[in-house]
Length: 269
View 1: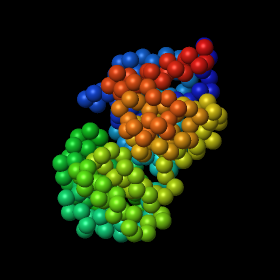
View 2: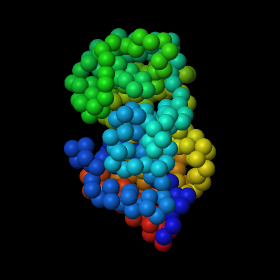
View 3: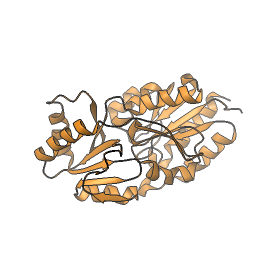
C-alpha cells in the first residue's frame, strides 16, 4: 500500500486525545503505520505551538500543523513557523474590554507565540493552564511588537452562551468569535480558521485537497471539516457536527483517529 500524497489532519482535544489527556495507544500505532507507507499526519489545534508540541513528539507529524485555531502553521520537523496571522492589537483590546466589563466572572487569556498572558483568572483558566503546561504571565502583553494571535474567554456554559450572544450585538469586522468547548469562547482574526489554514497548508505543501482527510469534534473544527476532501467526526461530537461530516467514527476514548486511518487504508487498498 502506498499512501503518498494523502494528508490526514486531526484535532487534538476530544479527537486524537482520549481519556485523562492521554492519546490512546491504538491511535499512535495507526499513525505510525499510516506514515510508514507514505501518508502524512498533521495536527490542527487551538493549543499553542509549545502545548501542541507535546503531542507532536508522540505522533511525529510530517504535514504542516495548525496551531491556535488557524492563526499559525508550524512545521514540527523543522521547528519552524511557516505562516501566521494575528489580531489588530488596538481593536482587539477594545473588544476584550467590552467583554471584561460585561462578564466579571469570565477568565480571560491572551495568546502570543510562546506565552500566555492572563488578564483575569478563574477556575477554568487555572485548569486550562494546567493542561497547556506552558509559560504564562499575569496582565496583558506589554510588548507592542509581540503579536496577539487569539484571546480566550472561559466561564460556565450558560455564561459563555450569553457572551457569544453579546458579541453579536456590536460590530467586530476584523475579528471572529468561535466556541471551542462549552466553557471556552475564542476571539480570532477575521481571516483565521482551521479551514483557511488547511487551504494555505495544502497550497504551500502541494497536496490535493481531494486527498486530504480531516477529523475534529467541535464547532471550531467546522471549517476544517468543510475544507477537507473527506471529513470525519468522532462519536462524542455534537449531533449537528455529525450531520455535516462524511463519516462518523468511534469515540475519542477508544481511538477515533485509528478508526479513520483504517477507513483510509480500506479505501486505498
